[in-house]
Image (cartoon, rainbow, N blue to C red):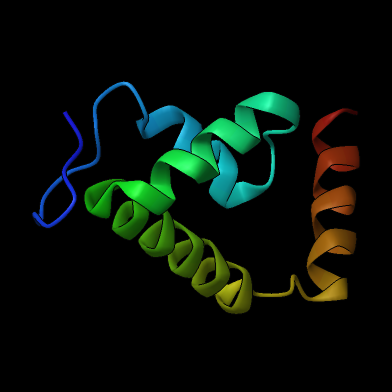
Length: 82
């Protein structure tokens, strides 16, 4: 059953493949199959787009670790190892 015009969760057998397609970790025939399914199935297509947007948002919110924080952690680790 393909959910062409309905809102809701993705097809249960597609969720993991859609997540892998969104983060770029799927290749080959699995990628082709997943993208073709998402193009035909409204629920899966919407889920894929939401996953891509979520991943992009997380990447832009990634905070840089201050350089001195790493140095302080190393110094603390060395002291605790004595």
